[in-house]
Image 1 (cartoon, rainbow, N blue to C red):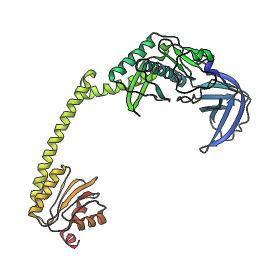
Image 2: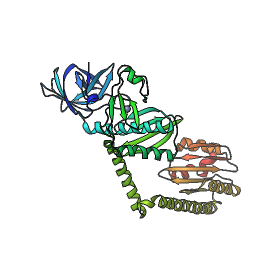
Image 3: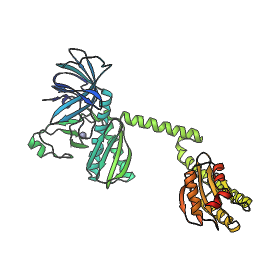
Image 4: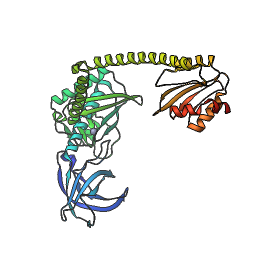
Length: 404
Ligand SMILES: [Zn+2]
């Protein structure tokens, strides 16, 4: 039977334990080791929270293992581990006793975020009556699913309330009520729990059944920030950052904001207005550019209109201008009239039309000879062709075309 040391002391980082069982197996072509211990402070993956990681050192041989995953099944906790260092030639013998150490930074980070989650879920339930119907806490994300939706004002109210609870530095209580006490207790719980129920109380803010380690006082959670709240399955998926994660998030976003402010030469508080201005300028320039390219296209078309099989190559132009140019060409030319937009490197989009040559035959030719893609009818075809201007011109020479 495992003794879950994290239940009685969430701050315990190291422990000694007898080994109940130890076995070697192959997982994804790798030798791994599975330890079941008499007691442990490794929190296993459960309730939406990923497991602790850390190390185990055999007390008798000094052999070191890196614990990468911890699971629980039927109340038994298994520690999956790799040999630390170069295992080549090492004979790993069964060991009787180990010294375990959890990765404390990772654990404390999860304690901050899990306690923060309780404050948010409890506050949502208290103010709006919505339930937390899904929870996930991994190394880099903490998401909460609610069966209801929120306005921006609701989110601001929740944030302010939970951060006030942090500044009040309330002591968090862990209770193990008997059946009678439990029956008279109002608490949140996602599912029916068998056996002894563990209740985590944030006085004045939340009471919830939970098996995970928590901080001692709300002040240790640090800042709680709701970074997103998106519609999800008819409700809301909220993403939160607490403590050091909130600090990292702030630092990252501040850095991005500073870069943008430097690039646009405006104070940080004015970046969105400056970006809007740049967007408008870019939109106007693009519009202007398209207008000029369309003019160039029609001039180029006019220049070659009397040639045999006139073809025009241009970097870019809009669809309407291309169609207009090709239509004006076929009015005065019986051959193949083509407009190609693009360049030799990326290939070209094309519109080819003719008043007397079957364009479907032309399409078959360029599909076969140049890997073109596209469709159309006898009068006009369009598509893309992945080759150079020279090759296209060679393919569409008058002599070749007359054969199609
Ligand atoms: Zn919980």
